[in-house]
Structure formats: structure tokens, C-alpha cells
Amino acid sequence: DTEVTQTPKHLVMGMTNKKSLKCEQHMGHRAMYWYKQKAKKPPELMFVYSYEKLSINESVPSRFSPECPNSSLLNLHLHALQPEDSALYLCASSLLTASNEQFFGPGTRLTVL
Amino acid sequence: DQQVKQNSPSLSVQEGRISILNCDYTNSMFDYFLWYKKYPAEGPTFLISISSIKDKNEDGRFTVFLNKSAKHLSLHIVPSQPGDSAVYFCAARDSGGGADGLTFGKGTHLIIQP
Image (cartoon, rainbow over all chains, first blue to last red; front, side, top):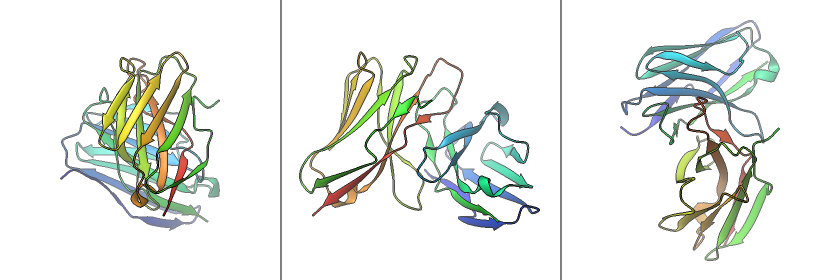
């Protein structure tokens, strides 16, 4: 299994909803990442997990809450989002945080109403 | 302040000809560079990379050139094929900097015309 999967593919939520994005990989990678990509912009790093521990939080608002329950899974819990949080959320993994190549999932297209 | 710049939002090339995608960077600490290809509704797919100790890396139809003094890299695709039509992102990494994410350019939309 050489891919990163993400669910759901699309998500529409209201500003008072609580939802979660899920990411999974079975490549034995110990580093996992969340990126956010707005339209016509490059992906921007949000969080980095290394060996299931959060190692980097790039000043992301607390309404985004990451969780890494095990080495294969990465979640992003969403609560009280704003319409400007609408974006494509990409999950990626790499063998280690020191590894250069990161492998991306297909993303979740999030719309906040 | 954009540290990785792709100044051409789009590029149109005829099938069979060479496609050249350009990327400039400003952070001299970047020491590893990657190109990703992205189709609509899919995540970026790793294409080819180059370490700063090299000036060229080749993989089949894809060659990446790095000019460290000019802080410039380019991706050459030859011959270009219709399936190459996609958005290409240049990305860079400072492997010693402790920031483990990739810094991406805005992307260039490559259109291969038959």
C-alpha cells in the first residue's frame, strides 16, 4: 500500500458544527502533516507529527485541533470554523521528518457556510 | 514574503516539444528541491527532486536543473505528452532548519496542446 487516503472527499459544515477530517497511510511512515491550500495559492503547512507527537504547529488557530491516535492515522478536528477556513486540506506523510519526499493524499475540500 | 516563486501561472506547449517550468527561491538555506504534479481533485504527486549538492537530476522524460548561484531551478519535460497537462508545484526544504514542512510555489498550469 503506497498511498495516503483522506476522508471525506468533500465536507460542507456550518460555523457551529463540529467535524473531523481523517487521514491514513500504511507505508510505515512516522511523520505526518496537515497542509491547507486556498484557491490559486500554494499548500501551506499547518501541523507536523513525528512518532505520533505534535512537533510543529504553524500558529494555527485553536479551532483546528490535530490528533494522531496511532502511527497510521491522523485526524483534524474542526470546531467553530469561519467561512475563510474554506479550503482544500491536504494530508501528507514521509518516512521521517528528516526525509525530503512527502507523499500527499487527495485532500478534503472543505466549505464553511 | 514568498520564498519560492513560480512566476508563470500557466504555460502552453505543443505535444512532442519541450516544456520548461521555472522556479526561483530566496531562502539560501534551502538545500532540497522537489517538483510535484497535481491534477484537479487529486493531491500533489511527487515527480522528481534534487539536492543542492547536485546541479542536475534526470528521470526518464523529466530533468531538473539547479543553479544555486542564481537561486533558480527548472523542470524540463521532453517530449511533452497530453497526460503531462497539470499544475506543477516547485517545493523547497531546509533540511537542517528544524522546519519539517515543504515551502511551495504557487504552481504553473502546464497545458499540452495536440
